[in-house]
Image (tube, rainbow, N blue to C red; front, top):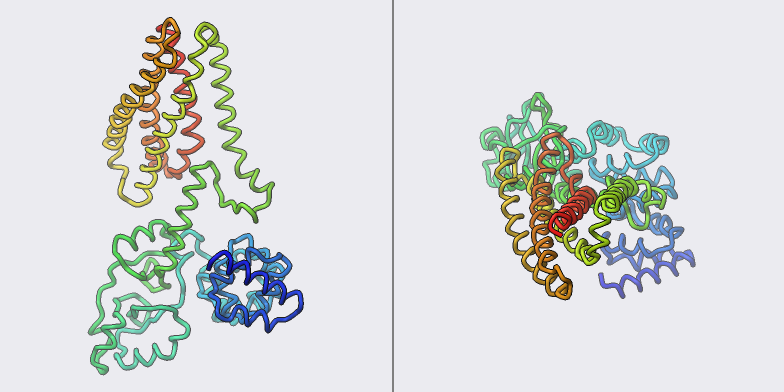
Length: 453
């Protein structure tokens, strides 16, 4: 949707809502996709958002709710009647319904569940038992399941009966009478098979399956590795619990990428630039900021007490400290990004620890030599009028090599060590690496300068 079109639609909807013209709202939105309507929500007055949602049929409203940011979704739901929320949830797949219920206050969630059909509540409550970032947390209960003694004809008839309840399926899961997963049949193979034979005679082996407590990031990697569009979830005894679909995995990939980016910045939770309260944003960001501030103040204390005579004698030394620290930091951040991404994608494993670290140290050294030569030449030219400009250029050269080599080592080693210790490797980057580089780069640079001047 173009910006101008969105602005025009927003204005029209706002005017209709002010006039109480609900039919006018429906007419404007009739040809709009749920994603486009969700975009319009961002521009509407907060008081108009519940009105707009209430004017739509529950199926469309459920799709819009899922497209909204979590903070905005909670804001809108707080202004809706529990019965209407229950009707919206009824239109969702069980995994989306469970996610929405989990976002409601506990008392309100109970009220909404009480107004929903028992069979839907059973599926939702079952999914809520699993961690949100696990296979069980992202699976949906809706699937096509038949026993191995069912005929092809009976299976096709069964699919016709439940087609409206199961969205976008391509496989039929075959189980025994105890729900133990035996195999699967593709929709194409089922349609082309002899109607009188049993499904068990044409079923294929399931290429991959997971248990409900497998981490969602591992699930995404399995999808990529096996190139599947859906995957069954089974319990420890092999009984079929649900399925995970490709659209769920796309959401996981987006979520995991966002989490890594936030952790790179030293923020441990999702922050929406508009809907997250100011005090919450401050609380989430202040720990790393205070830690890095402490580190930088430590640098200042060390410099004042140790290198003050050197700086007073050769003041131009201070001019090149930012270049050394920034270049080392950039190289270290590149290294950490590559390693964390490799761990997340499964292209790097812990068995390659020493090989990877040694490779990054060599790469950092060569990068340091190149950057050191460039910086030393420029530093020498700038300080040519100084009596000891050659010594200054040499100090810049050696410090650049040291800083880049060290941050390459830390940038590779820190995420790998954290991964081995079962911590999030993304926590090793961003503020931590910046603080280390500033301390190491400045101290080494001034220490070398102190020795040679």
